[in-house]
Image (cartoon, rainbow, N blue to C red):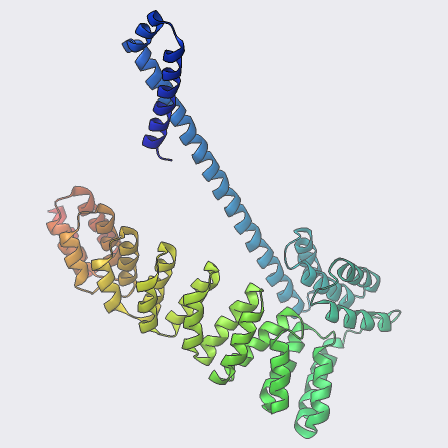
Length: 445
């Protein structure tokens, strides 16, 4: 409720109370109530105003607390993503102690990737020869996450660790992995049937993430119907989530023929990261139709915006324009403006900068035009007619971003508003352009 509405509600409540009192009070009291003094009226107004202010402050405090909580959760999500990424990078570089430290920190945060972190922690510990620790971590994973898609990989790692118990760590294990990839490549070329069987076992085993990616690439390179079937099974989730996302990317590389499979994967999963992988795979396969369907129908805002940005990278200007016309969300329209910029559609951005009723969206369109060079004549038309100071400031900034010194000089010379004139001169002072410097010299005369 706004301030006016709150005051009206308080006034109504007061009038009802006064009416009730008047009905019950004797005649002399009624005459007193019917003639409130100026002091009484002022006191009532002050109380009502104070109540409104208290309610408004409480509402603002609640909004601030909600925003702070949202920012804190976003920071937490980013920290978890960084820990996972850093840990995986350390594994790829055989820095196992560092990887173990990263995954231990991630486990303590109890996020959605805790099961994956447990697996990679066990992997890192086993590569350091800490086999008892590795087995303990695997036991935690199996006990606390019995339905985890990392369980299969963990069981394969457990078998390997138990087989190697009592043996010293082999420093040449990295070279052995390289030899295994070469052996797989040879088998795939010389005896495809045995090669496919060996490759499947290798992908289901406890090889390093880097080596599994190499093996997956061998599968893609083979190009047979059998290898395509295996790739599709992995893409549908018949493996750990990381390998699934890699398989989805490779499936996208096979072209538009993969559209049906990718669409089925997208609709059958609730994993947002898998859905993002499908969206990126559509970029590789140039599948605009399915991508447009996601951008139009997806209810998850983050995924919807991802699809919109991808359409922009594909240069799909027509679909982006259609989406903008039907969209009602301001935030989504901002994403569409950014996508139009990515697609190079300066004409549509110019139209929106002129005709969009929402000042926030107009400023976003103007900003995009600035990043495209700010040579569009519509900016001059907008500036000349505009009464909104913030929109004018955005045009000045767009000229600065686009390096259009001549337009800034024209504004500085003609603008009557001292603050806007100062803004244009300030931008010119940073550009070091010939035309701008000449005008700055004129100001010193």
